[in-house]
Image (tube, rainbow, N blue to C red; front, top):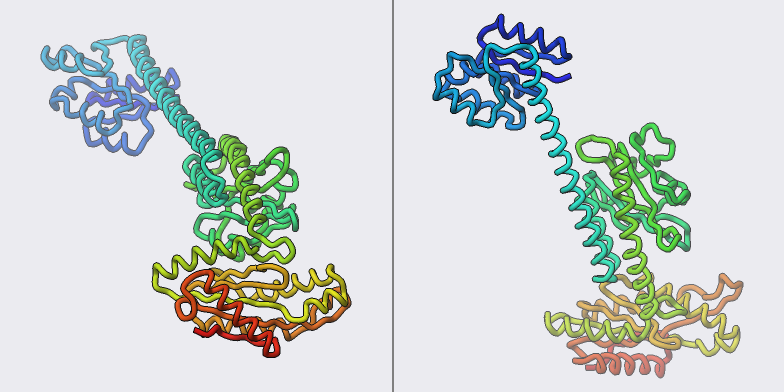
Length: 471
């Protein structure tokens, strides 16, 4: 049923049109002047306008111009009487308006109305098709961008940012997140989270099966949750912690080579609308592309991490320490800032190996590394440099700060026995040397040499102390 606006000052004639149109299941609205017309078009969903051309011509076609300005998509049918002079009639006919001559019969009226409504329907279809085409072009562009990402970077953060930035362009939502599977704990970790409370949930964890994301991971199936209040799978804990209000969710598993690597979820479609199947289908397609890039980046990151990590202790290895120190010293020279190096050599490790064996000696080295790591945080860097030697690089730290940290670590190593978890007990201490740029050294070699010399001076004078290198 269409809604038709009839604009005619002859009320009796207008009511006759209403009667004829209602017999063919059309609803009509009457207006007699320009002000009424503009108000009705603004407030109602009009499908077609039937205008008395005499009224239009008398206003020098202003009414028709107003109709086009108010809504150019509404078809207009003019009923032209013989009273309209020749010039106005030609001007009206030369416009983009359909018309019928008065007097006209019912069939003629209905044919003109149906032509106008068909034009309206075709306009709507074309608009929908054009919108769908533009959306498809955006989607294809997004897929192309993601495909390029596969070959352009192996940095995990860059991959996640690019992929989810594109997802946001196509699916408008208040918030979204990527949860990656921690294979050691079998938990989902919020790797990336955006939205009003995104930073508050970053690095939080969900158990397998916990919440909607946990359900998706456990079942490896996508899901639409139109109303979280009615879904038992929804976990309220995150909202309670952050103060965010989750109304609806779509989520899909991230699968790579048939293996779960994470979950992508989007929360609260903008405009308070509900997520639809087409949103989920689009998200699935995007994540299928994204999963390959994410997994490749994770594998690369894992390989890179292994290449710079000491297998025994989990600290950085000597290779990374050398590269880090060179870069940090270059930066210190450039900015005119200090840099300190702490060289740690454990006391009595030979006795530990001889008494308990090299396997237990390895465990002791790991426990020492854990105590050191507990006191060192970025931008500082701790490494196992070899055997029972550890090196800490402190960018921006002067000698006083280095001495304070070294003494804290020395006391922590001395304080508690080692290997108690293996039902053994052994005491280990540390001899520590310190060198600083620019006070004692001007190069990486000098930093190592000066700190090493200071450490050996401690060894020769009784061990278990710290010493700042001489200038």
